[in-house]
Amino acid sequence: MSTLTLELDSALAHSLEESARREHKPVAAWARERLHIAAMETEAEANGYPPGWLKLFGSIDDDTFTAPDRTATKPTVSMDDA
Image 1 (spheres, rainbow, N blue to C red):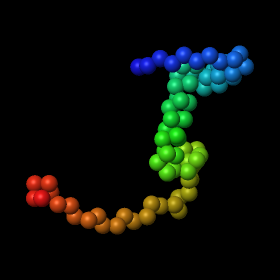
Image 2: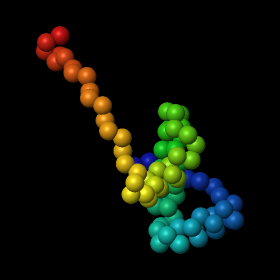
Image 3: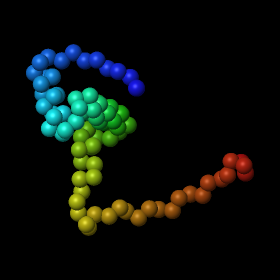
C-alpha cells in the first residue's frame, strides 16, 4: 500500500478530523474512502457517466420500478471453430 502525505491548514485539518470522528473512523480510513470515491467518480465521468451519478445510484425506492426485459443475445462462434 502506498503512503500519501498532505499538508493541510488547521481549519481543514480540524474539519477532516471532525468528519472522521462523526463516522467513528480513523482519519486515514475516512480520507482513503473519500479519495476512492473521488477517483471512482472521475473515472466514471471520463467513461461517459453524468456528474453526480454516484449520489443517485441505488436511490430509487419504488416497488413499481423494474428492470426492462433483456433481448436475446446473438450467438457467438467458438474460437476453436473460427
